[in-house]
Image 1 (spheres, rainbow, N blue to C red):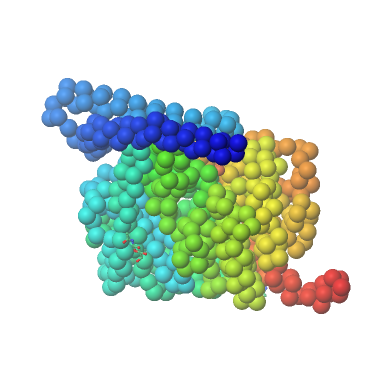
Image 2 (cartoon, rainbow, N blue to C red; image 1 turned 90 degrees about the vertical axis):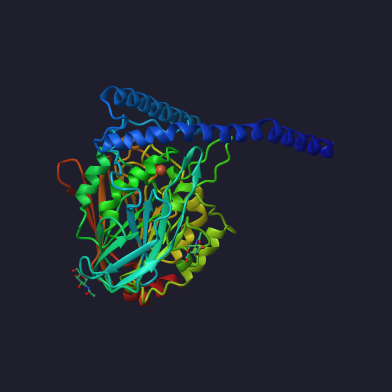
Amino acid sequence: MCKIARVAAALIRVLYLVAVAAPAKSLVAVARVAFSLVNAPCLRYMNQAARGRSCTGNFCGDLLVGAMAHSWRMLVQGLTSLMFLCARADEYVRPPPSPLVLMAHDKPASHPQQVHISVVGANSMRISWVTDDRSAPSVVEYGTSPGKYTASGTGNHTTYHYFLYKSGAIHHATIGPLDPSTSYYYRCSKAGDEFTLRTPPATLPIEFVVIGDLGQTGWTASTLSHIGGGGDYDMLLLPGDLSYADTRQPLWDSFGRLVQPLASARPWMVTEGNHEIETLPVVDLAPFAAYNARWRMPREESGSPSNLFYSLDAAGGAAHVVMLGSYAAFGEGSEQHRWLEMDLARVDRRRTPWLIVLLHAPWYNTNQAHQGEGERMRLAMERMLYEAQVDVVFAGHVHAYERFTRIYDNEADSRGPMYITIGDGGNREGLALRFIKDHKSAHLSEFREASFGHGRLRIVNETTAVWTWHRNDDDYATVRDEVWLHSLAAAKRQTTGRRHVNEL
Ligand SMILES: *[C@@H]1O[C@H](CO)[C@@H](O)[C@H](O)[C@H]1NC(C)=O
Ligand SMILES: *[C@@H]1O[C@H](CO)[C@@H](O)[C@H](O)[C@H]1NC(C)=O
Ligand SMILES: [Fe+2]
């Protein structure tokens, strides 16, 4: 009986592959060719128009080609939005969105765009950028004074396909060794603008900006302007949901250009959210294709098998930041679970008084949006974080701000991490406005507000840090919430004797 069922299942599978999947794939291949034939001239027209140049040489010709290009673009956008809606029709329905802020590249194809940087190991920096010209060299020249490049780093580039889209060359090159707290001037692909970065400090104090669910709307733009380009902070941490491209790949490029003024100046350390997955039914596209190609993080240096979870040291090891993946397997026996165990075991809390974790779907949340979505991960990993005495856990996903007290297993616990949801960067889905008054965690929630904004964690010294939340409600960033933290490792050292007796 079982055997017959198995054979039947195998037959159905073969039939599916032959009759549905294969034709769908060849259809996509034909569509891809047709698409590029129509799309290339349309893009050329758009670029010419953006630069204020004529495409056909006369006014009527431009008008006609322009109308065709625009309707083509509308059609493509409509189709991809439709696919996106089909893929995830059960999403929480939010208030109407703010318009997208689209950024064009109006320089030659060989010029770098979408420049962003990330720390690699103790004193190196990875520079990532895109050129439409795939033969542009993956070289970064740099030095400590403008225009004088005394050293260089060479990397390589990658590209990816997504349905009908083919990316430009996505370059990654590592530069270093670099001095701490130092400004470097650099140029990518030996062309285009010079950029400036400042390396993080090798000792405390250090200041992190934390912001989740960023997107690329008018709200995003105001959050970014409140953070500031040449800002008074050292590193930006992002707990997932970057571009909200949601399968429309050119939006990844536009996002890269929108964040470039900030992301080319300070390291942006990110982890993935649900909007990075971008799989579609039928056409089997690998998940995280765009995210992994574009936002490469220091996984090798932290012994991680995946770009979806990794860790880094900051301030010479005084702070250890663990980036977890809510959308990579996390259960016992999974690669992530094993890696986390190993990573936490390597942290020496005498050398590293601050331990910080970021992940996307919050473990504690009293907002109506995304209730319970982080629960399985909490059950799998909360104990490990508690035993390692993690100081703070930042999450995104819920588009609001919420700060909890120190918690372990649904109870207030002075030895547990403080939980903060900071998914209020400003994406197109808007705010999650409804908090649940009588939620079972409501008594643990110390501050909650549905406004866009960003947070800052300033670690003053080995015992003390201050967290502030800056909301965007006004034309300037207003500090709405402030709390002082004491490192759990330092507290443990001070009270070891007493606690030891208590535990006996
Ligand atoms: C690019 O360089 C990195 C680091 O040197 C290397 O691990 C990777 O395999 C290279 N990729 C390609 C496509 O050559
Ligand atoms: C750390 O900074 C806080 C706040 O400025 C201060 O009160 C405390 O004495 C400092 N601790 C050490 C060990 O320097
Ligand atoms: Fe999310």
